[in-house]
Amino acid sequence: MNLPEAHHKIVEAWVDAFNKADAVAISSLFSEGAKNHIILEKAVEGRPAIQKMFEQEFETAHMFCIANEIAGESNWATLKWKDPNGLEGQSYFEFENGEISFHRGFWDKQSFLRYYSDKNQTGH
Image (cartoon, rainbow, N blue to C red; front, side, top):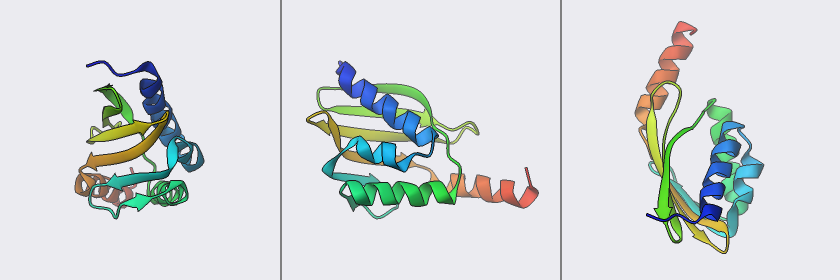
């Protein structure tokens, strides 16, 4: 697979902004009319809605993404990731004119919530 360097850098910038819980920086990587769909959540459309969705997610829990693999070709990329606790997920990005036009994220939300719920109950 041959992922253009510009698209690879956008995914890296997405990971960096995600890890800083910077919803403004993340949303700036998306086109005005982009769609963002995290599985099991309502899909959102448009940069302002994407920013709001990430703001709400970052208020819910501290999340961190360790990129295991960034791959793809032409106008799409995949990101395989985990968090420091071993929870895993994958994201698919589609690009148009140097911006993310579509993002779909897959992760085991139930395991994530169970882990952080257990952690909060035990104080660790």
